View (cartoon, rainbow, N blue to C red):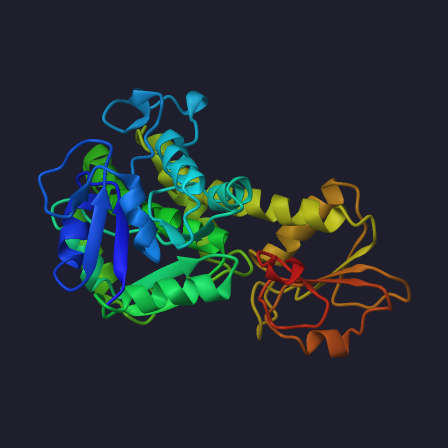
Length: 376
């Protein structure tokens, strides 16, 4: 059995390391002495391991940003990576040859920069997805583990290692994909909490004869559209005769009731902000723009609440020429607004046109909005 190294024996690291040690040979280091038989006071003792996990703190320098007091969003900042850097510098100075698995929370793009800085280390990123209070159990019973790195052999070595003590599926990805998985997983949980509590706030501020528990129970019972994975994928923004207009009315009601939280207003606004972001990308090519799919969704001829038209309006505001469901005998930017690659056969773009695909349909040489893997 291969020996596993562990660095960081805090509130998360210690219980996980001790749980892993029930089935694996673990040696663990922390800058402070720890009352555990796994502990070593010498980083050099980890050099005999083939894999070392790092789970040290990445706090904020500004302690008011931890969420226990009101946060001034004008002074937000990244995490403090002093502890991570110190560990990596120490391992590099010892010429550590094993795979280094960073499990601390980091922002997207951080691990890639660390790998460049410590280029002699074999760095992989794999976060721990746990809850305080059941740390060890959560770690070893997780349904899925996401391992990120540039080197397939290193990722596979980590997978082989953790399969000694976990039963969940193991996925491989890039540094950035795994960093986003970790952070957006927590944001997704925050969105769900904020969503449910917004119903409570509206009921209280409006003195409505309603229970937020009953409303949420009904939403969760509707398993055809709401309590499913429907809508939970990248692509076009929402549209139609209901979604945008319901957002408008709930924004109006938020203002009328003078509610404190603006989640409903923000959701309505973000649809427009994302349409503007897409429009700016289309306009950046400095070519005529053709949008394939003018209706609000594929298979219908209604244009009420069409996201395609909204994007087109922003393009027009930015000074671009827009056409819908048409062809042009010269290069253009062609936005595939509906998930149907056959539209490119019906409205065949001129040679040297730029195809922008919102749906990741596998169209050769297309720019896939939200997928830059083909550029790596």
